[in-house]
Image (tube, rainbow, N blue to C red; front, side, top):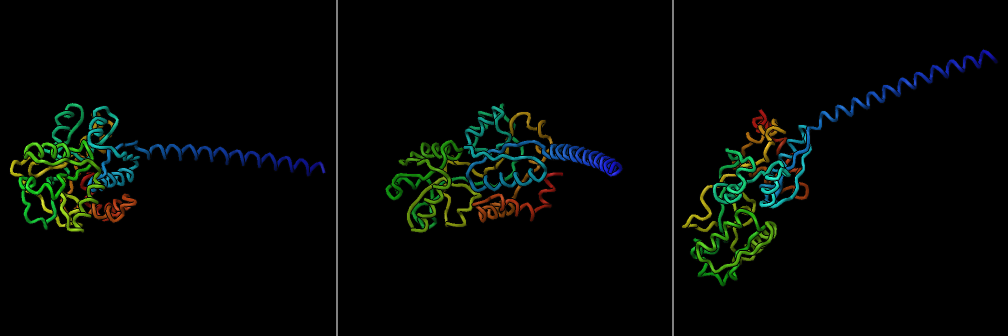
Length: 299
């Protein structure tokens, strides 16, 4: 009996040390895993998002790309004026969509010394202006609108106040002495109004831009702009807060290399629109199918 008790004590002692060693290894591995996870988290980047189709597409595209590289990406929904102010205050990392030389000129002039505006655009074939349905045969120019103001109830259907194009449209109303009111709403509400009017063969006039998927849903035409108030070709640039280039040197290089042509942007917007309830899925699809393009940006 005495021998058996000694044997049990020895076995218990051995088991105690074995379990203790396992626990130490487990804690050690846990610490290593935590350190590894910390290394993989490259930091948080905040990209301002506006509820415009090309903006939703591009912001989700960069969310996919950057999160694949270990960054955490936040996409707060912020209108243009607030984005510019947030950049200047250092509260926003990236404003992805600055239209120049006309639409966002005021923002550029006001904030060019407080934020970094990229010198090269990521898209160089934008167009902005007032549109009406193609079936409105008597209206070809902005100068024709006053003669038909009763058809439109003297209203131009607009979107979010503060957007550069809305500010320019106010200038257009003054430049052409239009007897119209610019109705503020949202981009989504404006598109519903435009498509409903088109589907019912009714008059509607709205400030719109290309690229935009609405042109595939409705046959619309840009009105001539003899005074060139809206400008001609618009290019889209990114802007970042000061010191972003040093805080996120690698990411800054990637987004400076970022460029999309008409086909690429059209496909991206289409993929995202097909998954509008979960746009990240559409962006993931585009990323998967365009690895060579993305590699060019990141080299």
